[in-house]
Image 1 (cartoon, rainbow, N blue to C red):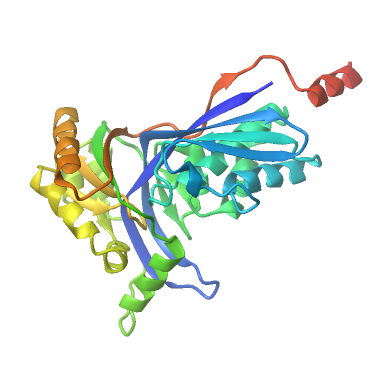
Image 2: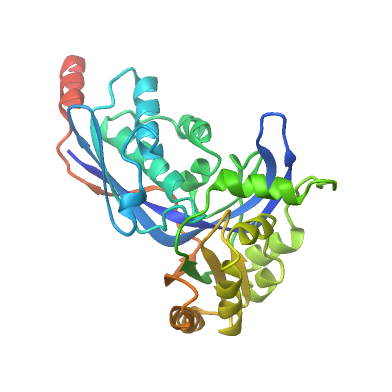
Length: 315
């Protein structure tokens, strides 16, 4: 049996960051929007845990126990009291180390795939709890669409979205470490009071109304200055997208991917073409939002041996 799960990337249309907490994390008001760039994770029975990866920048993805998808499979197996005998194949299309939660997406997809492969039917709230233990962005990758993340981003409140938003995402050469960006944020904020993070009512209204112009006026990322400090070349990419007609330009999450909000799909295509020609980025991709979270898209109907044996014992 094999199970294939598709999972989206995310963009943070608002990322408000508070001061460091005693545990080292930061409180956030993180408005997530899932976008139609996807990884897929296929889970197949194996004699132990094995990872393979294909796609752009696959060589940058770790294949050991530090991989979030592997950690997700191990966590679910431990809860179920079984071994993580599974081959996880990750087909990457979300930029690696790009601030679009690609690793978190793979973890959420691995959880859903292994849960289906092993016939566990784990309750949704339990899967979300495992997600939160794995990382701050993993719960949103599971649910998708749009949500406000508070705490360190793991506490989710679904948000209504009244239309489709069109984006262009420009991939940069190299990556940025999320912990390094937060450290730079803390350095830049030294000596001044950092306000408690809150979601913008105007931004939430723009999402609810499906108004790209109103959303463009309210998008904000408190980590952008830190990302630009560590990778100043991103400023040229932001400028090129703005010059090409983007309604808004911002660093996606901790970067270095940059995100550009377009008025409609034809405008997004023109912005992507201009960014590609500008020489300020490695590639430019169009995508629409919102998008569903981790979803089973392929399934071999033959159940695994453990499931067959369990059903036989019950019958």
